[in-house]
Length: 175
Ligand code: NI
Image 1 (spheres, rainbow, N blue to C red):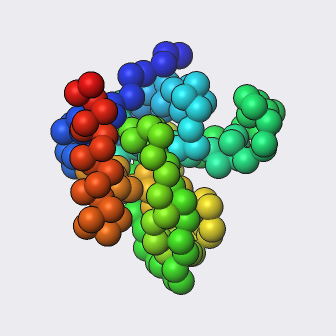
Image 2 (image 1 turned 90 degrees about the vertical axis):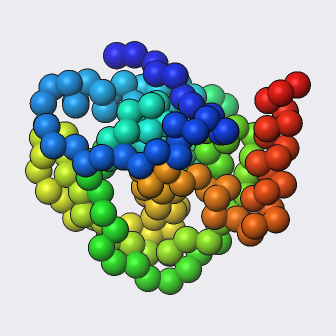
């Protein structure tokens, strides 16, 4: 297991599109475990492979990890989900949710997402699954899948808000 380096905005590698996973071997399993360890260490509720500079369609999520108010979060709440080659096949409703991102540290903004989704994905063995998700989990999946398209949550804000936050981050980085 290893903690991987997380890229942060404005690193342009975050804007690259990810490729589908075609080989379901032990190195994939090792990488997914490293991603989970990196996410828990951060701590965060989700991590997409491009955030650790691997441009493959791999996402890990655990929304239960941070759901307790304890600091640090209670480890026994771990419920890791791994999504390979995930595609959203159905969407229903709208939800506004305050999002943050390990690649955009310290920024939290409301983003509009679909409230309910159906997602088709593969596990680390290549087996296919379908999951119905709503609320927080649906938001987390949509946020992470955006990363695979090279998109951050700050790209989904209004033009002015997005511009203001990006300018602020770039300014902070050059100090
Ligand atoms: Ni993110």
